Image (tube, rainbow, N blue to C red; front, side, top):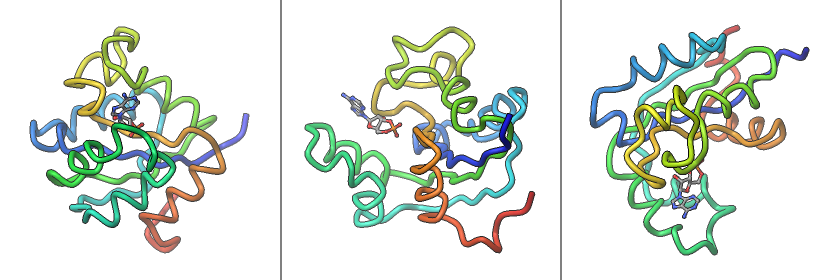
Length: 140
Ligand code: CMP
């Protein structure tokens, strides 16, 4: 199996509730390694650019407002099949549909304040990692 990297974001609902460590424990328990991490506050234009693929969706404005409402923690996760593994650990986008034991089932508030973001494929992972991190900031 291939060692991959994926981009994870711990969202403002989680930083507000002081859950960064709890999320990280769940990621690490699943075998993912946090090989880069930084806490930052997204500007409106940064959030709009990051979620540009959703620009036409009805929830776009709310999503941008939420993602700029407090600090986030951007992370690069590394491991075997890291993209799929992270999505498994996160659970479904809507916490009401997320499997028990997943981050969103355990911690998310609703479909918008859903605690974590994870890249959905290897190519988007590469783009999303580059959005937040320079190569020199990532150590294996
Ligand atoms: P995320 O994985 O960060 O990618 C896009 C985000 O849009 C998603 O998680 C949700 O938090 C957010 N979102 C808000 N409303 C909806 C919705 N109705 N359907 C899908 N995603 C939504």
